[in-house]
Amino acid sequence: MTLVGKLHSKMVFGRRVRVLGELLAARVPAAAHSLVDIGCGDGQVAHLIAQKHPQIQITGIDVLVRPQTWIPVQAFDGTTLPLADQSVDAAMFVDVLHHTNDPLVLLREAKRVARQAIIIKDHCRDGFLAGPTLRFMDWVGNAHHGVVLPYNYWSEQRWRAAFAELGLTVADWTQQVPLYPWPASWIFQRQLHFVARLTSGRQITSVSQTAAAPSL
Image 1 (spheres, rainbow, N blue to C red):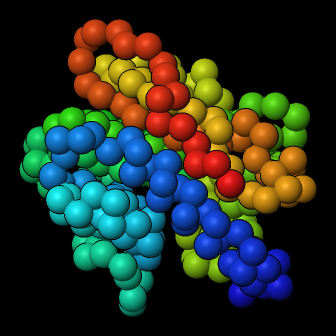
Image 2: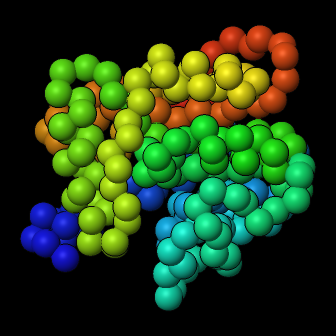
């Protein structure tokens, strides 16, 4: 691991896990009893969600299964989820879709297997130097894990178009994702991150921020 990677792990990773655990747990449907974390890594974020929702059975799926994980993890080929149609209440992606060549492939699979909701944390390539900033963050956080880095970042407009193409409704969207302390937040936070909850259906629902970002 590089010096930059070590500093990231020490100063950012713990806060990231805690903040995302709170934000994502707040968007799990109240009636959910099962959730699959797709591209779960070591499963720490999912483990925090399980602590806040003890009634939910959470499992992980990843291309690279790490030797030690916080939740049960099953390997998959990166494109087809080894799950039956409508077999879980919710599916979740945490900074996963921008690591794929085509996020629509896994989004379509998530819609196939999830009965109630798809929960996403990812990036928006909008604003000044958004692309280079996201590439740097991605390299620091993932290169030492051997994660594939295609740097496939979408704008908010592209994300929303993809959701509409798949017949997914944005039930909740926020770009208030306080992952970094000041002054790093001024560079790496901005509006580069989002958390969303998607549902299937033809009805149009308004975008809300009822599940607010944690105060820090």
